[in-house]
Amino acid sequence: MIQILADALPILLLLVLTMATFAGFPISFTLGGASVIFAGVGILTGSFEAALLLSLPSRIFGAITNEVLVAIPLFLFMGHVLERAGLAEDLVVSLSALLGGRAGGLGVTTVIVGALLAGTTGVVASDVVALGLIALPTMLRSGYRDDFACGIVCSSATLAQIIPPATVLIIIADTLSTANQRAQVELGNFAPASVTISDVYAGALIPGLLLTALYIAYVCGRAWLKPTDAPPAAAIRRASLIDIARALLPTLALVGMVLGSLLAGVATATESASLGAVGALVLAVYRGKFSAGLIRHVMSTTARGTSMIFMIFIAASTFALVFRGLGGETMIENALRDLPGGLAMAMLVTMALIFVLGCFLDTFEIVFIVVPLFAPPLIKLGADPVWLAVMIGLNLQTSFIMPPHGYTLAYLRSVAPDSVPTKAIWRGVLPFVAIQLVALMLVGLMPWLATALPDRIYDATAPLPARPPFTTLPRTGEPLQPLDLIKPN
Image 1 (cartoon, rainbow, N blue to C red):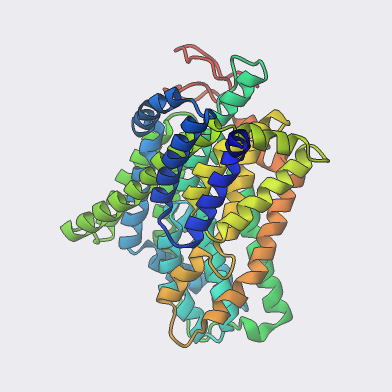
Image 2 (image 1 turned 30 degrees about the vertical axis):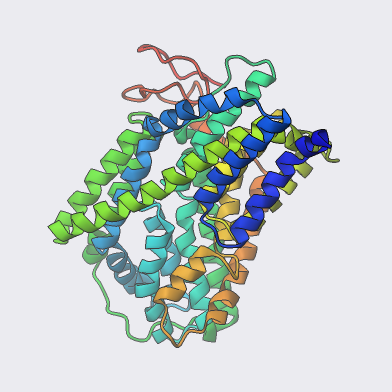
C-alpha cells in the first residue's frame, strides 16, 4: 500500500496543483506549499531523498544572482518608460496619416504599431492598454466593426510575446539552457552547446515578422472582401514626411540599438537591456515627458513585476526539485518516449498541454513549470533547443488571446468603451487565434524558420563582432578566450 502511494505521488501532486489553481489560490503559494507537503510525504514513504532539499537554497541563490535574469527588470523598466512617454500615441497618429485613408489602413497601422511597440517594450499589458486607448477608439469612430477592431488590437499587442526583446523569451532561454545541458549530459555529451538569449531572440525574429505579415494580410484581405468592416478613415489629419520620420526614427533607433548590439555580439543581454533603459529615458526627455512622477511610477511598476516573476520562479524551483525527486520527470520522459510517432507526436502533446494551460495560467508560471519537465525529454528525442523555445513562445502567445480567460482580453475589456460588448472582444480574436495556430504549424513543420537566422549569425563565415560577449560563445558551450573566433555548430 505504501509503495502504491509512493508511485502515485507525482500524479497526486499534479492533481492537487490543478485543483488548487482552479479554486483560485495564488500559484506561487500553491506551488511552494504543495511541493513542501508532498516532499514530506515522500520522505515518510521512502520515495523522496530528504538530502535533495539541501540543494534548494543554492538553486534559489543561483537564480537571483544570475546576471542574465537582470535583463528582466531592465527591459520592464524600458517598456514602462516608453509607455508613459506616449510612444504609442505618436506612432498611431503618424502611421494613420500615412495609411488611414485606405480601406483597412487603420487596422494595418495598428498591427505595425503593435510590432514596433513589441520591439521596444516587450510587455503585453502595456501594449494592449496603449492600443486599446488610442487605436481602438480611432477605428470605431471610422466605422470598423467592433469585433474586428478588438481582434486587431488584441493580436497586435500580443506580438510582444514573440518579437524580441520579449521578456518571456529571456525566461524560456535561461530555463531551456539548463534543460539542454542536463539532457545532453544524460545523452553522454559532457560539453553541450549552450542556448543563449541571443540564439532565442534571433530565432524568434523571423517567426515574429511572419506572424505580423499574416496579420496584415488578413486585415487587408478582409477589408477588400468586406469594405464595410474596415472603411477608410474619413477625417485623418495629414502629416508631412518630416512628422512621420520624427515619430518613427527614434523608435527604430532604439530597436536597432537594443537588438543590434545583442545579435551582433557586441553586448550581452543585460548590457543591451541597460542600453534600452537609458535610451528610453533619453526618448522621454526628448519628448518632454520626463519627470519625477514618471520615475516613481516606472520604478514601482517594474519592482512589482520583477517581484512577481521571481516569486513564481522560487516556487517553481521548489516544485521542479520535488517533482523530479519523486520520479515525476522519469514518468514524463517515459510517457513521451513511448508515444507513437516519436518527436512529432511528443511535440504535439506538449504544445497541446501548453495551449490548454495558457488559457488558465500566467505565461511565466507555464514556463517555470512545464519547460524544466518537458524540455529534456524532447531534446533527447531530437528537438533543437532554439526551435523548441520559439515554438513555446508562439504557443504561449496564442493562448494569451484565447477566450474566455486570455489575459489580453481582460486587459482590453478594462479600457474598451462600454459600447463594446465583451462577446465582441471574444468573437473578434478567434480569426487571429486561427492565424497564430497556422504560424505555429508552419514553424513546427519548417524548423529552419527558427534556426536559420541564429545559425547564420553565429556560423564561421559571419563577420566577427566588434567585441566578444562576456558569456560563453553562442551554441558552443566552450569558455570564451579573448582571441576565440565564433565557431560553427
